[in-house]
Length: 144
Figure: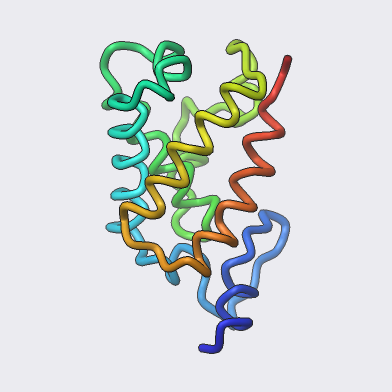
């Protein structure tokens, strides 16, 4: 697959479904890699001072939220829609609405996600496409 084909295939657009090319979920490594990204994301959030503000928005135990991020990313990236199959799932925007999310929180979240993608060995071209999509999502969560 050429670089432009990979970039096109990695474009994350929830409104587009194709069966002729691999999904971003498949391209980045499927369940194992998506779980690694979610776990690394929370490891970073739990350990770096720059993420203390967003870490404080979470409970002491990150086990459940790690699983929910994995489940959400699975479906968002074109894999099994695990989060949306949960009987207790919420609209992702509604789930974040109770929290004060401004530019500092958005930027800390993005720092954790960028590092998680890098630390899990995602190639630079994949990271660039995914980071752009994550940036749009993180910006949409801002409520202050």
